[in-house]
Length: 148
Image (cartoon, rainbow, N blue to C red; front, side):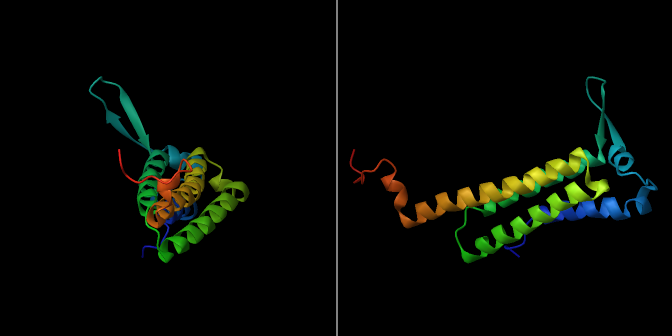
């Protein structure tokens, strides 16, 4: 389960909304469906429309956070996770570029988060691996003895 890319859940939820959303709220147009909102009255009296698209982006942020935390491990499972995350990014990018229902700002942000997951995952893994191998002590080219 650790190799499972969490952002796949966000992409899958968007796919459910894009291809089966009309079953839930009758909207045929993806933009109309993403704009469906729950209105929250703030203490100031202003009304904040919290849209389905906003929820999907918020959910993807939570999944990205989990992925970043998981990237600090340096086991073989994380290598598989990075590979699967790359596949999720490629699939999401293709959907964004080719499928009209995916040409929305909400899905664009999810695609960008998939890209950040890959880049951050590899960068964090390299830093963690250097730390695990003890190479972090040689950052300035000198070996530190630990003495002050």
